[in-house]
Picture 1 (tube, rainbow, N blue to C red):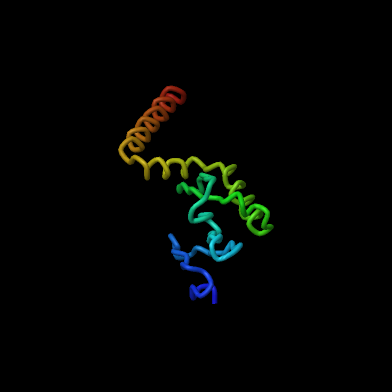
Picture 2: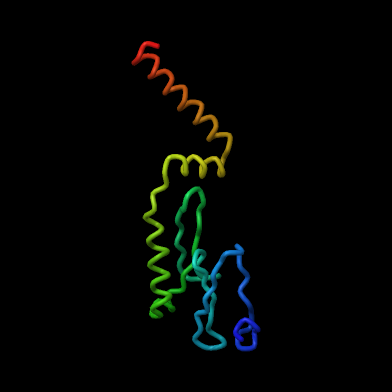
Length: 123
């Protein structure tokens, strides 16, 4: 019944089809939707983190932190900030941001490796 907008003025608009939305509701004038991955649609605090080669920015409303389910969601978002991407994930991330400089740095890196291999092993 909530999604029919009988009690809430608007439906959530998911940025991705696999978003799972929950309603944080105090009264008809004080409510918000939050997603498992993206956080709130709008918030007073933002959390940016990288997962694989993607960067996400989630928004948090600190007034809802007293709600236990929302607090666990907030803790999960903060846990993602400690994620350390692998070398290949970093390369993919940099390539998505600027392909030309990533290709140039890759060629320079391969040249340095080839130079070291040739000098160390006398090939």
